[in-house]
Image (cartoon, rainbow, N blue to C red; front, side):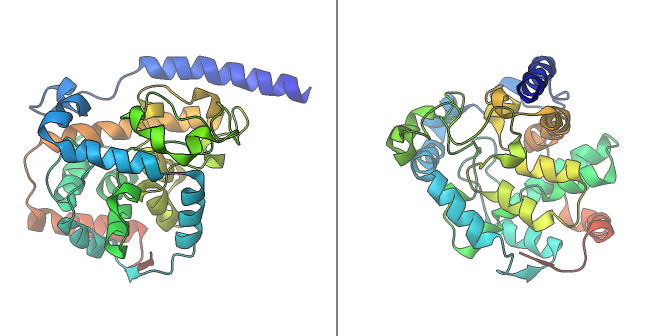
Length: 290
């Protein structure tokens, strides 16, 4: 009966996932053509640093690395700072992995949040849009960008060819591992993403930081918003359970604000600061552990 139950869930997940993949992100309201976003082929010519970033990222993001980083940052004993403080700190960072943005993180954070706010999204989602990238504070704790930014993907199983620049996994030590190189690797089918080790970066770290403050939907968005090979390309469906299918709908709703807002005009920080400081205070204490 147990095996039958697993097969039944797998069938439901497969059907729901196919339906999910037929839906699209919300409309692109920017002046930039939709096809021009996440154009990694064009970036090879005009932003070679993006490809160089992914080469290093794909060669070094192993299961052993991910487990070590989770252990290192799990205690949340590295800093004691407020959310707005970290937003200001991140204004010194430009993401090497992103072909769509060459501006400070504060600008992107406010662009995303304002786009969600204009659409009348719940206050928790507006806040999520504001803070979703704050895990990039890792960079200011002396972590290299290859383990801070970029698309995320599962480790401990076969790398999908739908991941950005899959050719760069050729020199990853896990690619020839007798277990990690197989489709299922160390996992069971439909075990759920909460049981999967994703490549370590700002997504995983920020989900750790926020776990006591935000609703489950917000935490799910934060942890999985960079998992493009799954939520956009449809790979790794065999990892998902029914909870993931429901939660991925929120990721898809959110990603229009993360992606398309990058082409919007630069916000005036001081004009928006009072609103967002009030919003932050609704969910977070003055300072939290990082």
